[in-house]
Length: 440
Image (cartoon, rainbow, N blue to C red; front, side, top):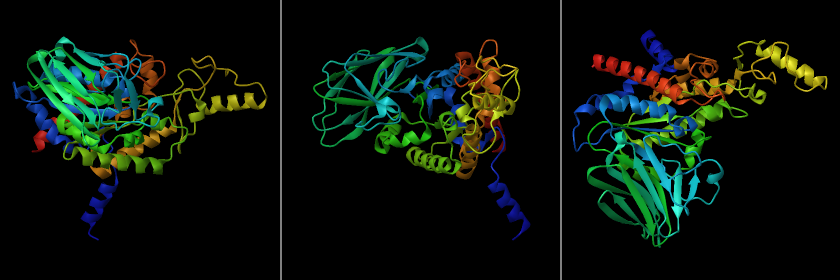
């Protein structure tokens, strides 16, 4: 075999090790973003749609990214959201969501995922009622006014209808049909509006998602996350619902942001996780067709849960700041337990008064390695979130920053921390866009 071919095959088998890999695949998105400020009235905004876990649901990072892009390119609206208030503590930065009593929420993960559940779409939730006059509403902040509203729901025999009021524009959306299927309805207003209300009438209705947009160029960042979920739970969403929703929401970039919950699983089986990752990415690629995909690698996160110390092949990473090594601490704990004393505080205690070590579970590293490999194999963009944070144990440093950039659980971000991660991500994407443009 010729040496040149051998070299090429060897390079193909070695995943890119940069912070942002396969950036060339994002070229269609880069081109649309570069033109965003020139779209003008009547043109749809550039739409980034992110699916993920609590990092996405909490909107600390996507909210910071939204602020950065909209400050530069203009606001295209708040984007796609679950209908109503699907769970306690639901955050919708830029809008305020309301929901009257009488609605039932189902999800792809958590207590609300129990069967039976209706078909669920891209938001990860469905919101249903049989109560006549039940309402859902959205009120936008000044920067997120919108003139284009979309609601997606399920039709079925005997279903009720929705009255959609957007400013002075009122439309009826009947869901009574011969077959159960997804259908989306767009409502346009002649001028930007700050609120919309949906009222249910005449029978059962199920809403899978809704979205607010401003057709005047600019950028939209939709954050669709389900707390606690893993990528595998996306399989519980219905392809036909997602296809109908995407036909109306028209994303220009799809961001996949999972990995933390996988890395914190009691046991991570790399081979099984790779199968899940490949199949779900290929499924999303089929559903979004030619839209570029960016996968965010699992971020750094730390724990004191010693049950996760060996949850995957490879070592846990010591993140203690003032104590012995993890091996020493674990040895002390085991010796105390063997002597019947229980878990005692080591001689050099960590900040945690119980003496439990702080570490990054090996499952996170295993997940991250597979994400990088699969992204390379499937030729989608990959961003090394952990490396950009500062590498292993950077979560501990962010918790102890002033002001704190992460919460005391060493997993979730403060608003300041989310904004900082967003800044890092956008800086890398901007640099890549410039490099791709220069290569043309």
